Image 1 (cartoon, rainbow, N blue to C red):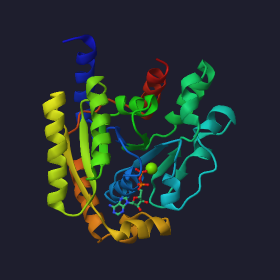
Image 2: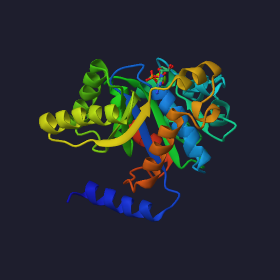
Image 3: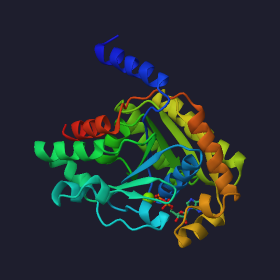
Length: 286
Ligand SMILES: Nc1ncnc2c1ncn2[C@@H]1O[C@H](COP(=O)(O)OP(=O)(O)O)[C@@H](O)[C@H]1O
Ligand SMILES: [Mg+2]
């Protein structure tokens, strides 16, 4: 066992004893528009309703829209911490359910090129964000360096796809890179917009078999979200569907996935949000 593995094990043991452990879940997809932001928004709501202190890092700088789905407006982003002297309190938005949203904005791309002063500043600001149990990271689609960086430093990844062959092919493409580059071994899959439970299962099985056969790796089924008109209705009202229609079919799916997320004893790599940001800057600096 090498030193890094031993260290990781020690950290895991420590964290499994700590009920208030800090957990980071990165949500990604191969193809765009498959439902990442809606998933993150509603899982966040459902976790918050269960008493989990949730943070969301909106790391999709191209199409950042977590704030839109919550019906709030972000004035600043991480960019303004770096270049406009803003604090994490200026940048972060707290929804009326206590969810802390941190807009990454164009600041995400800046992280590749910052000097030591800015690095310190960022770590300092983030270390003020103490009260988060689970940080959800909404990334862009595809296999850009940025997405892979966020996948690498997460405790677990959720890859979202729908049943369409294009989305599935791209999901496989993302999983393939994650596995081949040995970036993260904790890959979970959510099938979105499934017409029923069987279609969801069958779609996952197809992906599972392909990954097993061609990559000799395993992925885990995290559940499905059914195709539900209430989803786009809620989007138009700029409220999470889980809030507006807590009994709709999609909300029940979200509830099930939340139980799945909370029920597991996942190994946790991240000690604190400060440590997490430190890691982010390190992988980005490579
Ligand atoms: N389970 C679902 N049922 C019906 N429509 C959905 C569902 N999930 C997503 N959508 C639709 O897909 C659109 C894109 O979803 P979004 O979460 O913005 O995708 P992404 O973040 O991956 O680009 C939403 O605006 C919504 O209209
Ligand atoms: Mg999105």
